Image 1 (cartoon, rainbow, N blue to C red):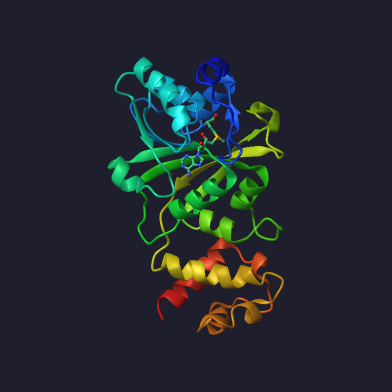
Image 2 (cartoon, rainbow, N blue to C red):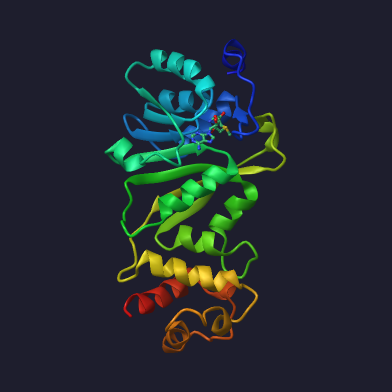
Length: 268
Ligand code: SAM
């Protein structure tokens, strides 16, 4: 990969959040996280010069890769030639492209993305009323601190909206920690890969209502629920009906309690 970078004169762009991975063993281990990929459709976001892309292709995947840095396209085209018919490269901003339209079949997502783009895509993939989603799993690199927020349990400072969003109808796991020195150039913080698979959606709950509840509850996380949920019509009464003490704070509520609250409010 270092040769590919040199041959194409690719210097890492800070503005595009480029921190590349070159270690082939590490890349093969990452490509193994989604499980068997032989002939499976994979959506990779931000392939860059193609290190992870190559590992995915070697694992037998059919890869669609969205990259917004045109400088990477020649290197990716070369990779495509080495795996005929297996790599489709789409130039553009992954935040603006309709992934369902692009893929038109179930797909696994694999990405090593800049922090802000990764979080925005993650929230998008886990939101909405349509479930199960078209993706079969998400394998995403995050700053370790964000990865911990995604898998956090109640009663911890990392537990918040992201944890509830990720856990109420999906199962996120911390799949691998990745040391900052594995990247070129190394970022300031440690990274970790989160693997998420969809689960059954609880019945009679609207996703939008659950989002409103967690937004209000964690918007004022130090306050008691009876205070933080005051602005949501019916919420304080729903707490009482469910036997949830309104003096508790948001971070003490289990994901299932948020779901129960949202279910009650979804009916009103
Ligand atoms: N996957 C490569 C690797 O692991 O070495 C590159 C990772 S680098 C952290 C992130 C890549 O995402 C860069 O190539 C960058 O150009 C690309 N990127 C950043 N924002 C993007 C966006 N909104 N849509 C598509 N690609 C993006």
